[in-house]
View 1 (cartoon, rainbow, N blue to C red):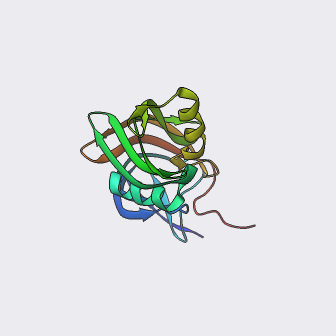
View 2: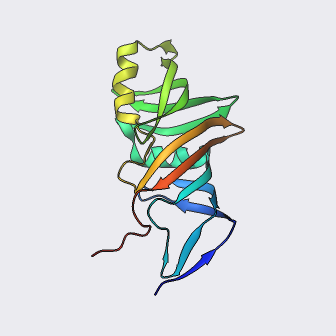
Amino acid sequence: MAESIRATQIDMTVSGLVLPNGLRIHSVTLLLPSPIVHTSPWTIPEGTQVDANVVVKCSDLEDHLSERRPAGLSDFRISAEAGRLQVVARMRTIVAVEVGAVGTLEFRQGHVDFVVERAEVAGLEAPRKVIDEIMLKVNPLIDLTGWPVDIHVRELTSGDGELRWDVRLRSTAPVPRREP
């Protein structure tokens, strides 16, 4: 029989978490209200609700995108201030050209996407069609589809060089999954 613990609340913080796609998460604070957690072996049962605060540093997102090189972009520089994200990168065509965009983050269907409000290529305003083509290759910044959770994003903010998410998760399968 599985051993378990019961509590009125479990609050834990995980630092330096690296997702399977290589993105480093600076910290995740998990709050399990009224949980029963099986400890031997450790599992979270299906249907468990977890409140989470996720923090991603802009420097970690820069590293992740520079490694992915979406749309042939490289040398990313990202800043987050007052709810806006500013992204600057190099695009190689015949010559290297600097591209930049300002926008916000949005959570859609299991993806965290960068929604561009304004963009420039080599100092000139970029046409919407060009922006849309590039963003199809850049987004999603984070893909959570396929994870055994339903996600309700309460708040998605950026500032002080960080991206922050306040979410409620509900497990749709035991974590970790066990093979039959």
